[in-house]
Image (cartoon, rainbow, N blue to C red):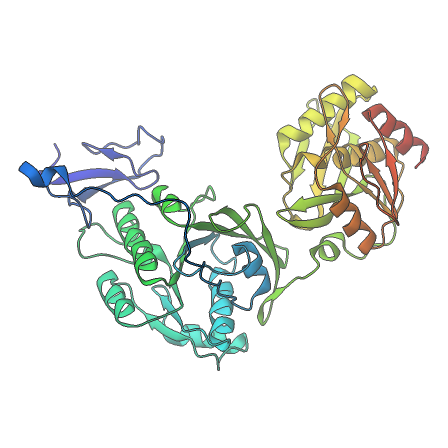
Length: 456
């Protein structure tokens, strides 16, 4: 029987239950329900009666305004500023998430150091590391002389009291899961504490006009730990991604009220910290001069930036009764669709073949324009015919076998030419790009014929 004044909250999804149970009925997670005290959140309304219950009314305004927008804060880390939409907006709240050890603290310390060196007042508050640990990292990164103001604290009341007295341009909190508010009896990292502390930090950003950057932990599924409402509170949600075994890291915007979503910034992790990669296409393509069968260069778009990446395919005789399908960096369902179209429309048989598809470098591709590049790599591997060294491929494939046009073709061709590519296998284009010879195909069968016969 539940005690008076106690509620049971799922730490995975935030659902509230009247009693404890082993499994949450909302998200089906096991052993995620924790007892918490029933306390009103900060700022909650008290019941009123009479005239006061009607409220004072709300004053509406028009869309027109003569107030100029405040200038963005340029931190000096160009890739971070790009993902934020051209710099950090004063009064905004940003949530940065990523796997443990991916380099979130290193990235934000670099942002703090460069912004402080440019004359901004920056506060770096850590609840996970001591000040000496942060200084040691800064020394390793060459930022020991940057005028960043450091603090190691977790009490929300103390942090808010200090930040309201002082005037900062950027406040970094690492991490939101370590903060705790004495207005709630739940422990740090619980759904109640994360929701309350995040709400107070967002309220501080709006009232003081300071840019607040919060670090958020992720679960084993890659989702931000804590209630999903935190992602709705903030203005931007950035994820810092990186595959083990690869030196580069990708900063991606999943939500941004002040810029484009799905924008990416590319960094390379080294002994001295993170290094910005101005030309990620050269990093993902590598330095190989000979194109082997099963490799196709895809000209993609990540946010506003064209990126060239190599897609590798291997088709081999299956040694078991059930053929294997393995995909790294692309959607498994998309591969199944392309294989089905190749079988139904082009006469290929993959029923007794193992199929492996890999996006070189560890980049993950999400756009449908990669369909034709994946199909070209599969055709090249199945026919043992390499694609030309200087050829890029892009286009969407329909279930009927039609090759459909994709957006921003000119930007893709421009990036290809910049890196020395002089040929492209594409859908019919409405624009031509000088310096790149375009071979247009309207059906997948045409692409199969040209690849197998090496006609471009």
